[in-house]
Image 1: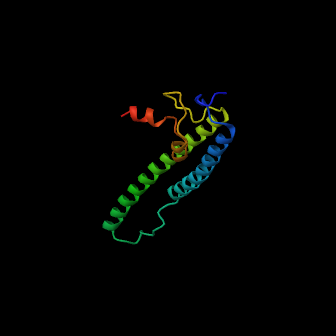
Image 2: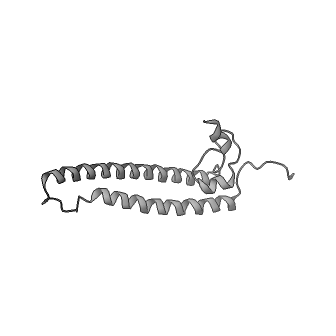
Image 3: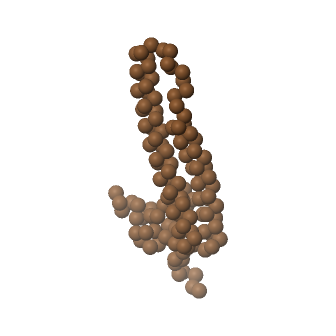
Length: 128
């Protein structure tokens, strides 16, 4: 095999390295997601029932805003986990690390930083 031929996919050992990175990110993401959903499920335990009505209204507004922000974070975390799981499927299919726009291999540095990406920097920059 000639040295100058361009690789069309990552080797099994390279894929295993990426799989390890993704599994670790997925483990951390699941923990964070569980914490977020736990805080969403727990009721307001601040015990503000005995405070004056004015403060109660402010607290309720603040609690609602906080809950919305936590909901958004949980949704973002869920999407991130879904993307990581999709990347694991691509590893199994041996299509991981191939840019869906250019068909070329995505640089290892980019995959290490954003392991669920499906675009090379070249393709990503063309989007803007």
